[in-house]
Amino acid sequence: MNRGENETSLADKDAQSLAAASQAGDAAAFDKLVLMYKDKIYNLCYRFLADHAEAEDAAQDVFMKVYTSINTFRFQSSFSTWLYRIAVNTCKNRLKSFNWRSIIRAFTGGASTDEDVFPEIPDARPTPDKQMENAQLTKAIEQAIATLPAPQRVVTVLRDIEGFSYEEISDITGYNPGTVKSKLSRARQALRDKLKDAVR
Image (tube, rainbow, N blue to C red; front, side, top):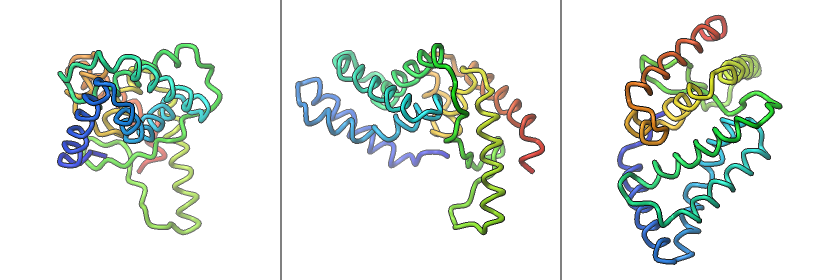
């Protein structure tokens, strides 16, 4: 699920301007940043934590950290890269202490390259039989994702769900691009192995 380059570029430019205004003390600009990213950050947190309350708490924690550290943003990367780095680190810290109560429920697959592991789930309203088949497939994907080690889960979500480039993932996670590719390759192979009977 790759982000459109033009859309991303415009959003990044808007975010950069809003970040600069926030650093100058413009509270309304910061509120706009929150509105721009709150759903994306919540969804990211939910994919890692698989719990609505935990995801909401984590997302709030992310934006509190952004609010208190906005002046440390140096515009050396896109604002979204800086924001996602904070979000990923927040989720990783929560994962260390979070007692899993449910499996990851937000992973629906859907990228379209030869490297992809998962089939696209169609947007059109499916028949009852197809709904059941999709539900079973989604459950299998959720269970498989939940078994990945946290570093592999991070790169899989950022690449295959969020559509970040390898370079962006490197900036967000601190892994070098080669490590990102290696972890992603191992994660995809592990998921293929786990899903070979469910995904055909």
